[in-house]
Image (cartoon, rainbow, N blue to C red; front, side, top):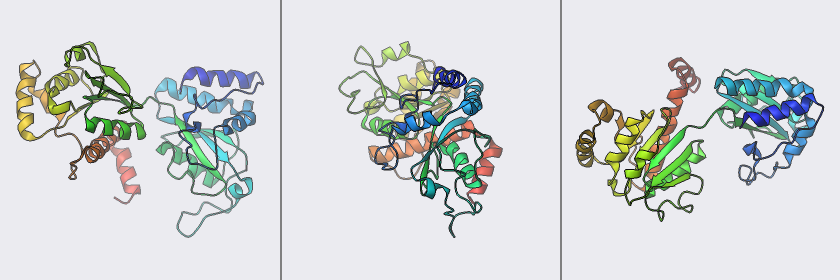
Length: 329
């Protein structure tokens, strides 16, 4: 999401014009995101655009403000494919009761919702709508298709966490696919273009280093909020990866490998000028512990850990405690 698009929509609505909404700007409506969904296709954005009025300006202004402030917030869409069903009361004996009505109406709606569960929309919404709007904060939503006649989509108004994969190993290829799927921006680095290929990393940013080694890594820089996974092929350049990541103070650094190999990496990392404090920041072995062995299994362990790190980074102890308690954990 970019601010220029949101500002253009605000300007159009204030001028009485119908704004142009595209899947490029709202990727939750892309053909890829909607693949297999028989109830909605990218053309529904035209329906949404035609429904917008000056009353929707505050919704988009809230989105702009959230982007300025770095708030955890989403712009959401109520998508109606059967108005009568959408408004029907379909509560059952399993789900929580949300009153005697279903959705407040059978029309599309754009809404703003942040992690504090503040909702802004141009029309009144029902208790059941509120439940599903709040779930937009679970990105894109947890119960978007729970009720008949409508579904819910959303786009985040905050930046993705960038994950650097140092090494284009088989495990890295699996990590890239999973990390992208759960909302990380992935960048893979290696010196062999045969491994850093589009076929192996179709959605990642791909960087090929010159010289047949990782010396060129020194010309790159990661941000302190980035995550780094050291997964070099054969572990040949793990020391360089650890030194680079800790030297840039990456928020998270993890390295794959056994204890014996890691002892040798430790020696080489210190010899390259890193400190014991730097080494202590490297999670080793990378990933959650549950018996993963194959590249695909290791990727699940690694990405699960990345999700947990992101969760702890974004939410306070108090917020996490409330969340865990709500789940009965």
